Length: 161
Length: 161
DNA sequence: CGGAATCACTTGACGCTACAACTAAACTGG
DNA sequence: CCAGTTTAGTTGTAGCGTCAAGTGATTCCG
Image (cartoon, rainbow over all chains, first blue to last red; front, side, top):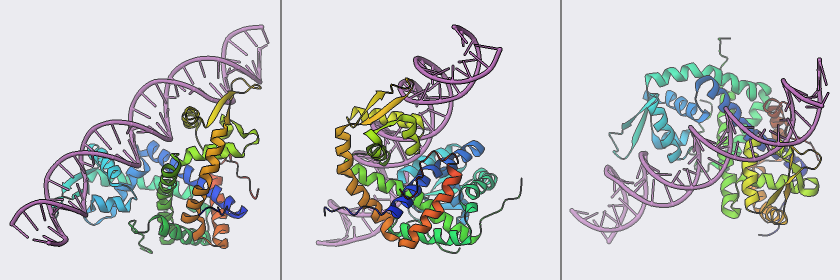
């Protein structure tokens, strides 16, 4: 187990650029959302996932899966969003261990108001610098990485929806 | 300024996978390094950049650039690494406002000991799922994003070195 | 059935990061 | 040559995330 296979020059180049993007992108998303909506990217993402769910409702565990978050992290964030009036915790009737997070009307309006600016930021930093082939390449490459990073596929990689 | 251009279906697919990877990858890198070396990925990265610098020495600002970090963040982390004996702060003789971070012998040995496991993790999660064409595509795509995210090119994107 | 294991969270404490304010050194223009 | 500005870095604080532990509810199985 002891003979390290180092990266080739092209692999190292790609890796260094990739890791830089991975470090810089969250900050870019966070600062736009913070500035324009006083929301972190993760908070926005939670509200956005709820807004697309049937009944604007999701179980905590399912929501954690869709947002790639641990349950404690989600629990804390949901508490804050609840305090701010963007969603409610409702005990799940079928399984009394479970909790449903339900988007409030104010939360829905917040998403509607915030989405355009967010999409613009995503376009500016990511999508609009890519042509159609790049987008296809990105999709393929990220799918491969996800298969490793998220083997159980907790994240709902529903394609083509 | 009010007519949002939403993402097309392929763009949305690629974006969702990409953002999932961006969320999951840091955790994967951090947990391996934490487990095997009690280092965060950022701490490792700081030591690694120093280990490659001439004289294993870098000005704080330059180091911040190479690690895509803000100066306050770097300053805190350097303090911790200094306490742990992996590097030293040395006032810069030419400019007495500036501080040089110098990798200690213990720091060098830490990098040498830690690098193989880290490279293995990078291979497992990223590089080894890609063929040569994928790597080239990734390099091209990330270069385009970096041009937006890091316009001043603080990060030293030295290609092909 | 009933105790044990598992599940679905929640909570608390600690560590890290960002932001803002501060210090000190080095330019810059009158 | 010195006031004002910019540069380089540090420090304090507040907020977010992780990890470990705890609480009920539910399932498993002998």
